[in-house]
Figure 1 (cartoon, helix red, strand yellow):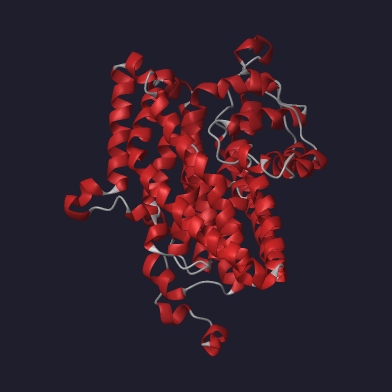
Figure 2 (cartoon, one colour):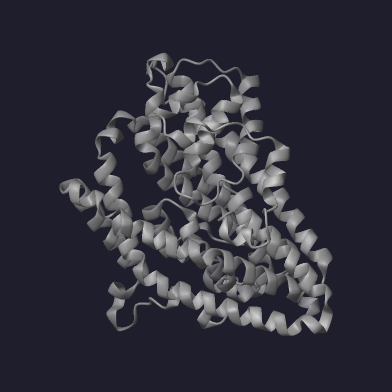
Length: 444
């Protein structure tokens, strides 16, 4: 990747040292936002537009960046069978990891039991307190989900904000463009220039990331305060511990298999993780994560397919959140769930968790849809966690971001499409020479 495609370098330290680093600027914005939201809540609530502005600016660029990256990467493969092979490997990986995440979270919440003893009567919950969009959430069948992948129009994929639809249209366009042969090369070259252009724009947008972090946290703290933290502190602590353990044990184990040091990876994407923590949406860092995984040595075509697709299929943190909160609400409302019912809930979650990509607050809506699907846990009970959803989102979006970075390295390794020298320099566990497989050495 060229420097023009590395937005994270546009805000480097330079002569300003640590004060010029993006992570420091975002962290400073977060601290100021928390203080303003706590001490001057009336003013803090008015800061929300700053956070919304930053998210909107990034969201504006997601569709063209995904399109350009996928089209240029797929056309560079010159082998359509490889496209299908990569997609199949990625989907299998996504399903295995998200299933492990669901089981991991369910075991943890059953052992910790944060909701036991609350004895909440669901009939006493005012249904009017349930947000309208969540109140009307309903179960989504497999056919509905598959049909939703196809946008109503070709251009509709770029205006609807659905990541999976953008991926579908981009792959379709790339396959057709590649089939044209040499006659399509000018279009491929033009798309490569567009890709560099849009990544340059991302670099400019990142200048307002600290302001976005400030506005998002000022509004959150001012709106929900710290009172809700104490009333449900057991659930908050449990979920943050589970998220940390899942990151270190499960994602760390998978990363180690792919010759990646999970702690070096966390440091490598520290800027993006802070932005995610402030905005509680992984959508705000999708372009940056794609750029950084390419910098870490992953092939452009792999990153272009795996990371955007992972935003719909590889939501590890969302799976942890849905499994944890579902069982918590059952415990809090004294709703008994047998082992068979909990296993059935895992199957439901495997479907409802897909497509909850990036957008702040969407996990809460998906949770309501999950409870509606189960038919056992009262849907109205989701109001119990309404006040702490954004706090829980701090952890779930963190895991989502890390999980998608790990997935791009794993699939790249399976395909032999990784620069081991770059991997070793950035997030690798061993020296570059020892990472190169014998087959790869023979090719050289």
